Image (cartoon, rainbow, N blue to C red; front, side):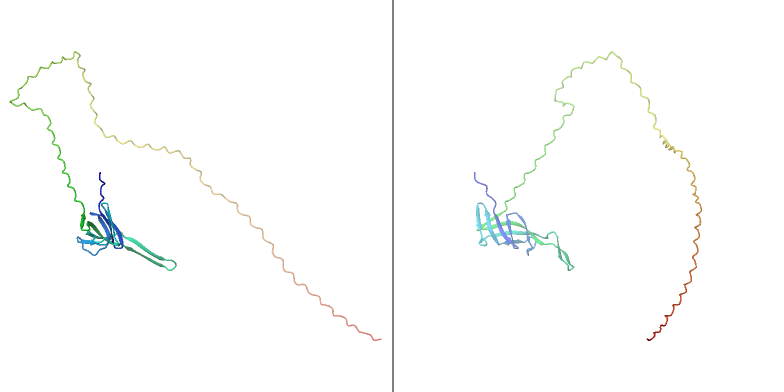
Length: 237
């Protein structure tokens, strides 16, 4: 049993990035200057593999190219960029959406051979629903079919015991709207009346004893005059 061959693939470079592509593959690359629906040739082929063969470019594979079709030009999800510098009150915040081009790989051309996507297999037709069988119904026989006489059925003798009469049911009373029952009055506990609050009578405060009057200030004492020193006379011998 021969091994199953792998589909051919190529490694291309576009927009500074490398991609592995196969026929009938959808690929998103950086924005290309091409209109929607146009065909683009990607000639920067670095490697060709598959089918048990490999061709390595130096740096490109000669004569190889990848044919792709532009499906649409779109933009990626938004990213938020925030710039910050400490102790300088510098804050910058903005968003960015990277534009890109969506391609579909139609064929890979190498060495004069073209490898395209395999043709899709035709879908198998849906099975028809089975017709419902007609149900057997009792119908009158046709004129041409013979009629067979039915055998008489023996009658079952009636029971000797008389059937008991059924008990008559009392007629249902008409539903009458019952008046709502009054709510029970809550028995209020007999509260003993509180004695009236009496004001407390306070005895009048006794008058503070009068402070004794201050004594009159004593007059200053008269100072005695000092005696003058006595004069002494010296006697000569």
